[in-house]
Image 1 (tube, rainbow, N blue to C red):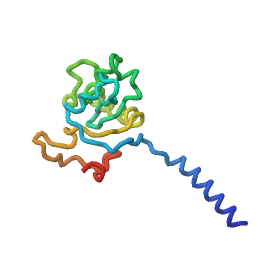
Image 2: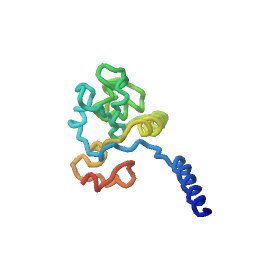
Image 3: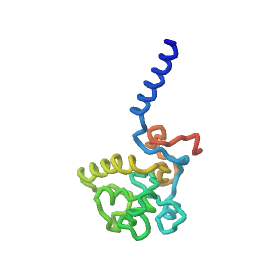
Image 4: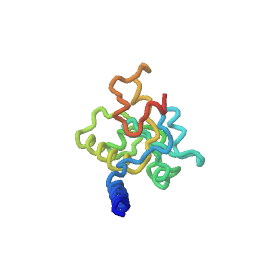
Length: 160
């Protein structure tokens, strides 16, 4: 009898603790993949049957559930189908800011970028991949600074 009560108590305790250890970031529904600029352009919200993807800091997010913001003719549609890191940092929709380059951004803009990246995109939208420019150098060789084990939801065995 005491053993049964102990088992029930342990089960209740483990279920309670499991609630405290929920994932902070949305898990990818499929294994992540590598996107070239050309591939990412396909997911700009113009084709109803395709998901809507956007990249920030080289991380590709599925923002389809925010279709009212990112879909065709939506207010932030300019950000999708590409890496819009600079635009997110500057809170800008100017065409010249719709790029991944962060050169010349102020400390405030870089801090804003990190806040939005961590607090909005990584918590709200599933990560579906990475841009080739994040993982590869300009000559196509592997980027020595990219560490897959440091990336959320990136599993080498699923990708290569």
